[in-house]
Length: 332
Image (cartoon, rainbow, N blue to C red; front, side, top):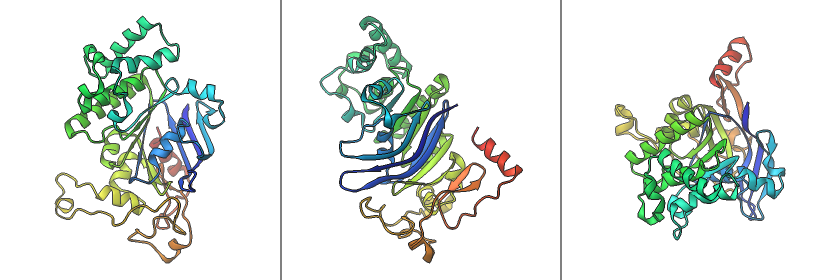
């Protein structure tokens, strides 16, 4: 059963910036979807839109179906009930997300009590269980955020996100600014929790290598749109869209002399969402752009084997029994 389905989602800020433009995504329980892209491509805006956490004055269109119910048409009482209990979010930068004047245990207990999930005594016990679940001793519940390391604070954020047993967890850059050892521990923890509790996970990052190792499927965003989607490892190793290929090439591969001595990057920056170029938004930076790319926009097209890409160079898959069977295998 589909846990989350996003249909033609658009987000436009009050200043006219089109941060998300016609995004379609779906996720099943127990599956992990990665969303990649540079800063300014709309990843975090997409995450905030899923729980209606965007600032006043923002225009949001499309549908966000969580267990079949559209979050965008819910009354505020329903939205408050969905947050934490139906879906929760792990924000990037735990130090900025935790209240510096409250002990971390109290901050984990708060949503449990607000949602009426337990009595104060039972909520306190549940807090201790959550801390142990994410690898922290119960005694750390009395610590203030500044008394914890970066990795410990991130574990507290994950414990808080799990406090009300949500079915969907959105992790927005959960390992930003952590050293590689702590990053690996946090990623293993997230994978373990998803497997044990049959959660649906959306993980957002600029690091394709992390998403390829952690997620089942990967969506690459550019200028507010998904420009490529498919099995995570396949997209990382053999991207169809030039932007996905550039992101992948930016990370040197161990044991590959070519990437070690000649690392590739991508000049320039994503376009201003309030001043998008005509045609394909990526064409000003694209190394293989054609004349038509400057005037003709590109939409996602089926490339077979559970893959989609929005590029003039991608040949659409021809439907057939073999292709249908491969697509079915790639999404299970």
